[in-house]
Image 1 (cartoon, each protein chain N blue to C red):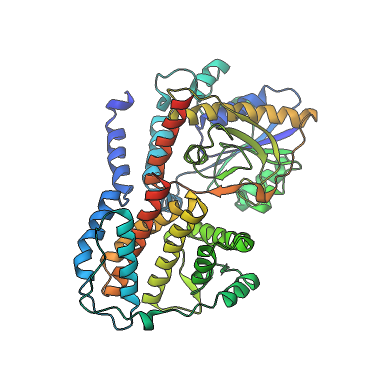
Image 2: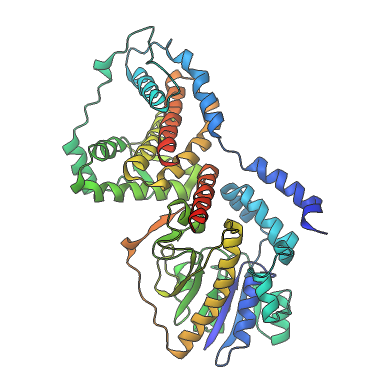
Length: 269
Length: 225
């Protein structure tokens, strides 16, 4: 099986974990890596207008602090998982050089340059670890499709800030916090589902630690789902479009409410 | 360098907080209360502005921010402010066409949705939900650039009133359907429109914004309690 990787930045820890996981997997070949370049003023302006402070914090964490943003906190985060897995590479460029995997950097994953690269690589599956919306022209290239791990339980919680929305709507126990692996289609988190899994939350958890646990699960499910497709043991199941709702970026007042609901949920546990 | 001692981290955090402007509950209340005295002096032969003010008053009574109703210097003209909504026409329109299509919003149709939603017609709940979902998605995707194009075409002030009417509809629908997503969006809309509110010249425009804030607060008091 030929697999191509989409990544949002060169040093994405999630992308590195997935890439090295793929490289170590028998019967699967990493045939290309496409990284989205962040150094684009138009993109900066658009993302800042949309996300404001959140965007600035994202830039800080991903570009300036990098892996160290996990600090010295143990294990239930991607850095701890990366250490467990013995991840040695600090960037996708290193992986590309070491394993001779073709790699390009593009301003847009849907660009003509990207599409030509993908078509030449001829992947069966593309693994999406970030980098923006994917258009139909790209979704249609790989034989099986584009795999994504969504940080919420589908079909119930589609869209943005779904960890927080799960808490705000009091669904922390009924639906749960977790990850859904699905094939991407033109809708928002509406594609066929391969697998989903919830995480256990502890009294000490806040949204940050929940997200960190979810990130680890995303890395595990991404590789697990890929193995399932390789072996034929997983069959994607279409979602009913009317079965869930789409959620959007939370207003700060709504976020405060979600935090109080999470506190209440932990008090019950 | 540890994160806590990193000056870049501190600088980014300061900038991020400045960028994350939003109207706090305290600021909203102060804004509303600062306008109350002036409202009672407004003379409005058409009755529309006073109708909005009366609704603000009702909302503030509900919130417990006011102890008694507004007393206007000039009595409100209810007769001319009565809007002749034909509910059946509204239902037919909404069954035939979407309230929004290709980014163009049907001007005034928010009234139909508000009426049907308010009357809690069970057999039409699905239809209301579908139109509201489309409006919600449009506003959330386009954000500050949403609700710019209307059919029929509207002029500057009319667009302001229409946008706020939809924002008010979102607050009301959130309460009626217990759907926090609509309150979430009305909170954002009122934040976006705050800068423009400060530049409004006409009493009617300012009153409509304050009404939108009061509807938002009634909704927040109920759903975020």
